[in-house]
Length: 410
Ligand SMILES: Cc1ncc(COP(=O)(O)O)c(C=O)c1O
Image 1 (cartoon, protein in one colour):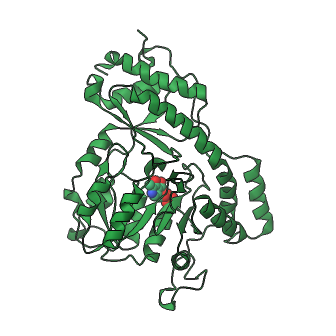
Image 2 (cartoon, rainbow, N blue to C red):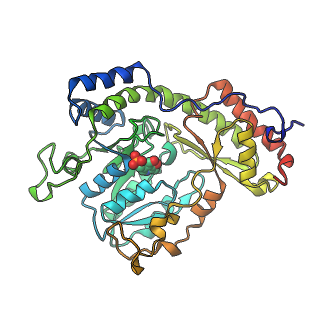
Image 3 (tube, rainbow, N blue to C red):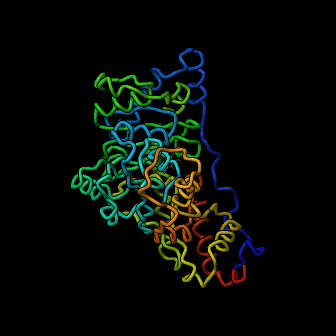
């Protein structure tokens, strides 16, 4: 019997497996100096180049760079004509930015429960949420794992709705061999600092529809249409432009995505193989349609009852002591966020246009709530580990499982 590192034993993973992030080398430095010396700092050639290469990389026709993922989602909602009184269905397991994008366009967020096996919205429940106000479904490809896009597209087609993909985590991931973010009417990606490719912050909207690209362009760039298709009455917008510095860095970062995705794919596969054999841990389920997954966050579920009653927090503490950088993900579904718990009817500060069709304070989505109690997360920086480090990490799971009785009372 091995002693758990938490109780004084040798840790299974000897060195820090999280690589320093963000990653950069001389290519980023040179690109930044080039922009600096060009004195063209605003939104110009580097942005156009990045928009083209990133859109093509994800198999979409048009890309419109902007300041962040939340902004990209807001802009695609606005460009798709979604506004006050409209409803957009999205996942209950996501970052608040998904909701902010919808709310800032003026629309109402309608939360769908999730499929705990995939951490994505439960497509089987979407149709029950459709009302005569519904204008779009915003699936979130959480952690880089594709949603069941074909079924969503079929539902959208039947009910005349738009699919607007939250592809904030989508860089390099595919569904049926085609890039995430290229399937719906439009999509939004994030390049915030923790992401697999980053400009510190930044975002991009993708679409295959030229008229919509024009409308997004207007919304991002003070009402200026890029393709001249937008009718004058809708030529308005804010300033959400990306700078040349950010675009230059992102073009360098994008070049690493294929190799990095391959590394995370292999490490993710090793994790899935090991975790599948551990009673009490359910690794995330990936369908054959998710042909490439960048594993921005690898997820699993911890079933305490099957783990001799050891609470999740005690398990996580033991794993961290073994040197595995594991965490528990969101503590609650996003509708528990204070924005949705405010009593807007009673005069609480109202930051958004809203309708009173939803009272989130009484909302109870059992699968999402249970999932938040069971979730285990391993982030992309750990998924970049060497094969040996990854093997050590998987051994740590086995060790903690085999010695779980030492955790009773922890
Ligand atoms: C799923 C999801 N959607 C949207 C966003 C918003 O992106 P940003 O932070 O770039 O505004 C994030 C950011 O982390 C995210 O994780």
